[in-house]
Length: 357
Image (tube, rainbow, N blue to C red; front, side, top):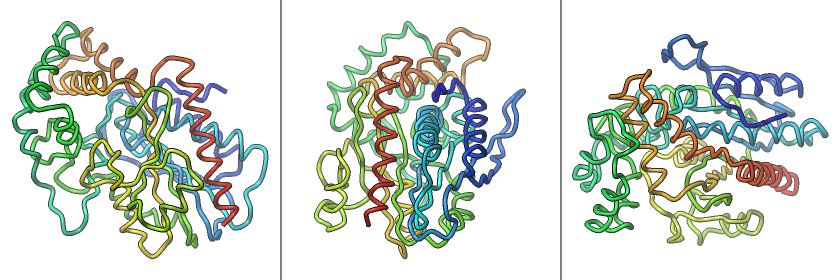
């Protein structure tokens, strides 16, 4: 099987087929969003193993839309390479959450149907959907110009001028952390809980069932060195649990390690930790590297301009969509094979760890 799909609908079809073929229990939740000439958009959840198991491995994909075409491939390959060959132990279940942002995946966007970066939308109950980094306000005219994209724009020269003015580290710690003032801008966290968050709040606990020990791998791409990955843990490095996890997982990075490129508000991982505080819940964001950060930002900026200001039949619109897809799911066959194998190995490691505990 070619695990990498070209679009959301192909990925969904493959996932449903694999779930049914390997005795998974499928649940689907519709997202209210309109796409011309398209079928319904759903978040699909497959549960494998004993529904009353005391341990669970959660594998989620597509929180950032287009990245889900990579995450879906890892999920499919894990099903084929593990569940097709052996049964899970009676005390372990696998919960696969397929394409948390179906609109973004279907439209080759990183954001959802309301232009929300879902990994900035999961605010705590005492937080408000307001505010933006001061530097973001200064950079908005560059990041989100109200015009269709052009492949001939001197993006690199403009970027270097900004880096010279603000410094690269300042930009890294400002742009992606989340903002709540520019609804058409990059990294917009929303003004209220998004549909995806509401679905998770209503149903996630039922997917876990009686599980008391959970390892959650949330699959992403687009950050880091080409063809490698890092695991970002929602915990500090001086905790016993982090020390234990670092002995079992490679490339683990703690919140306070100093290795994080940025820290964000409203993350899915922090929400899970808060929501399931009564469980031993280890949330690990797996980030698989593609291109240098400036190329990724260029792609995000161009696609956002195409979405708001471009025309679907323009060449620049198609170019912007293709640039975004390439930035997060490169066509390079070596990258795909390498990251797919690393992703599957990571999922299998989580299963082995749960077996051993």
